[in-house]
Image (tube, rainbow, N blue to C red; front, side, top):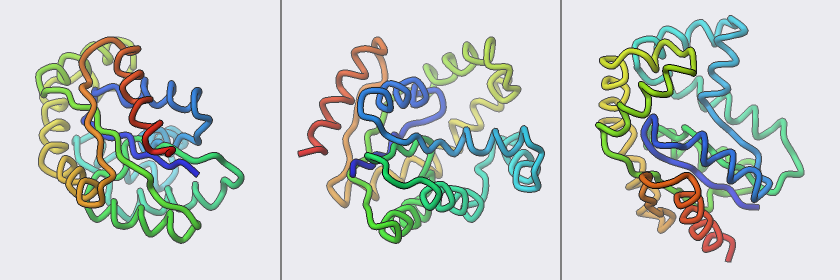
Amino acid sequence: MLNIVLFGPPGAGKGTQSQLIIEKFGLLHISTGDLLRAEVAAQSPLGLSAKEFMNKGLLVPDEVIIGMIDNKMRSTKDIKGCICDGFPRTVDQAVSLDKIFANNGSKINGMIALEVDDEELTKRILLRGETSGRADDQNESLIRQRVQEYNEKTAPVAGFYKSQGKFASINGLGTVEEIFANICTEIEKLQK
């Protein structure tokens, strides 16, 4: 089974690259962002709680995200593997993710990190906001808060995977095809 964490700040291109990876390698997509947005749209208690954090540009509490991931893993069987997009966002979540996979008889094979500088991220998210309809993609100060939150709380997760020898860095600038080709090279290394 091939299980990958696709990592990077908001606007790095994880969503675009995730779709290409899923199509090529036949992996299950686990996107906490998608799961959270679905809960918000359904106006479930979890969604309403999560919305308060998301609207402030803050991370949703670990226990909420971890529970959603565990439920997703338990409800899907007979898969080739999965790609985690937008999770883990903290070292504690990375530790919990390892436990979730171990409890389900599997493991994370590697993390692929898309590297993009803060100014480019802000520009990309504002452009995305023109078509996404997401309020949090249209407010520059909120975008900068999200990027700062990522840099302070999420970026250290890379060190967790580096210490396990499971980290690969990819330049997130270039064409979608160039970035995808570099990602595929790293995935092929994980499959050996």
